[in-house]
Image (cartoon, rainbow, N blue to C red; front, side, top):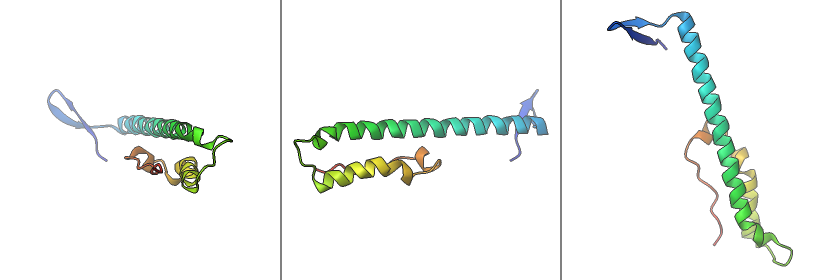
Length: 96
């Protein structure tokens, strides 16, 4: 990718050092975005599991649908990668 800057109204191509610096900055930003997305995903997943924990108490029988839903939530991060976690997430549907 050819990058440039404007100096005194004139388009000037980046030097190799400027391109390397910009590449490093973009990689750092991308890595940070992915880490934040993973953290957000796990937090939301944990909240969804917590909201249904009461259904799994010892005096209730958890239906197969709820067992499957909770398993999908626990396994959900493994269905994604660093690219897909940055996109819109379609969560498993909670049973009615």
